[in-house]
Image 1 (tube, rainbow, N blue to C red):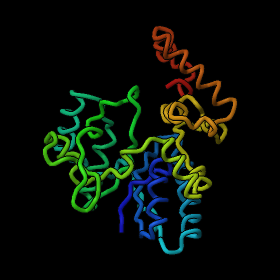
Image 2: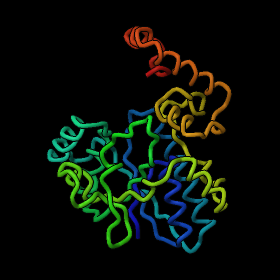
Image 3: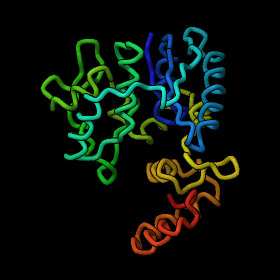
Image 4: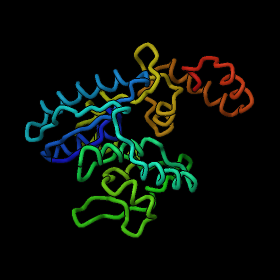
Length: 250
C-alpha cells in the first residue's frame, strides 16, 4: 500500500494514476483548509476521480480519502524551526510544516508528496529540488548528506514526480490513455462561478506551465490583468491596500 498526499490537483492525481496502472492499493490523504474557497471543489473532484479510477483499474484500489482539518493537526515545533531555517535560505512553503506534523501524528512511515520539477523562473531555489537521491527501494527521497533541516522536515516523505514538469505529465497521460481522468482535476483556490479564476497563484502556475486549455476566455483575461498589476507594483500594492477585488487580486 502507498500513502499519497492528494489534493485533487494535476500533480498528485497524475501520481495516483501511475500507481493505479501498476495495480497498487492507494491510501490517499487530504489536509483540508476550511477557510479556502476551493476545498469543496477539491473534495468533489477527488470523489469523482476516485470512483472513476477504481472502475477503470480493477487491479488497483483507491481507498476512501483520509481527511483532516488543518487546525486538528498537532504542529511539531521542530518542524517549525526547520522550516524557518530553510526559509532564510530560499523559498519553501509553510504547508510542509503541517504535512510533516500530520505524517508524524498519524505514524505514517512514508508519505508520497507530488512536488513537480519547477521551471528555472519559478521557485527554483526550493531546497528539496536539489537535495534528493534514489534510495534502495527505488524512491526519490531527501539525500542522506542533505542539510539537517531538510532531513528533519522531509525524512518521512518521498518525491515520485520530482523529475517531471506538468507538460511531461500531459505527454505521458496522453500516451497512457489517462488524460481524460487527469482533466477531471481541480487546482484553483478562488473559483469564479464554479470555474478556475485565472488569477490565483495555482491558476497562474498552471497556465504558465503550458495547460492553457484548462481555462476559459474570462479566466485568461483575468490572468492578463493580474500579470499587468504584478508588473506595476505601486498600483498592485495600492489595490491590495484598499482591498479592491481581494478575492480576485490576492
